[in-house]
Length: 196
Image 1: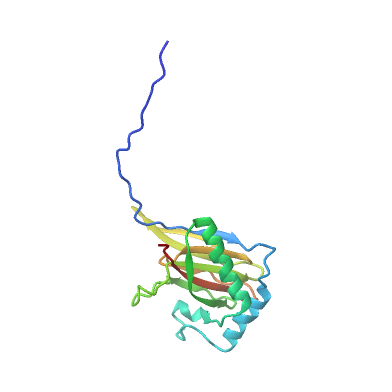
Image 2: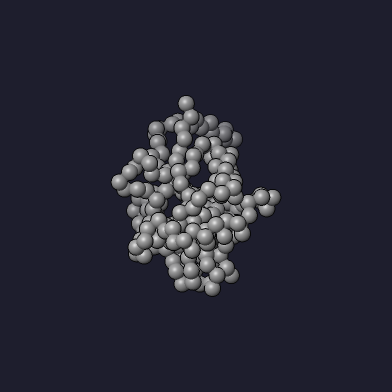
């Protein structure tokens, strides 16, 4: 009768992970007091006042709108921050937020959230929260590469009440809004806060 083999695992490599690309998807709790109607009206007000981050229509920032702080926006950012801490055991602080508004047939071109002229104040993590989307939701398309795998794409459907968290350097676009209703979202950007 053969005796069982006793194998000992040896650590041959000292492996270091140099970067981590991730996409985290979460839905807002139905028990949350965050009111999407109030957020919708808040972004609509900024659009009506034409508070765009950029006025040139060829830039993706054309579809981003400056927002003032209101209670429901504060609650949303706190919700995202707290859930990220629980899920990832990592503290993040809010860097900025803005509204996204896409009318019928509008889409947002590929972009990232890094300021090429100011890396220090650029965000580390970005989040898109879908406030409303009409009958047919849009998708956020992420572009990524690893090793010899080039020009890869990954899509996440932007449903009402869902948020998507990802590294700010990850290029992404939002597909065409095919609805009569506008697609409305909140974009929040975060920086890592390191504990002592």
